[in-house]
Length: 176
Image (tube, rainbow, N blue to C red; front, top):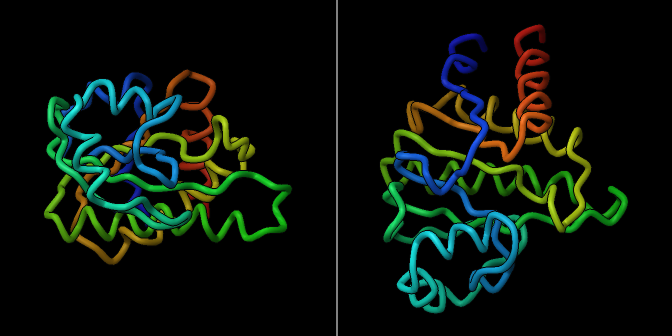
């Protein structure tokens, strides 16, 4: 597990500024933009992104779809739709884990060596941050253990508080 953990990085800042092969967008089911990181990615990528997203005909919760990065430094945007928190008894954990799995599947299939994830579902979808972080780090750690790609996985955090949660989750994996 140590080798896998060497591939995981935590960054505080704007995901739209990262020069990686793919950034992951915490999208809504329409894929046509919204608030938070989704809106920021759409604004930074430009109008061409909305046109390509219209051709994808939406995305189901727990799934992911890929587009070009357009005006972003990233070559690709992988759009994934996280679950809305409903108390934890409606399969939210499995759907959130699926977002990470499907995103990493698409990244590998498209030869992405580096990817950056935001904190999926923790904004307006109200997923509790501690639980969402544990699912993110645990799922990514398990998936990349047997894969060469992506080589680098960045958890891009909006603030220091969120970055600290990710550091704690990675430290827990190291101990486990």
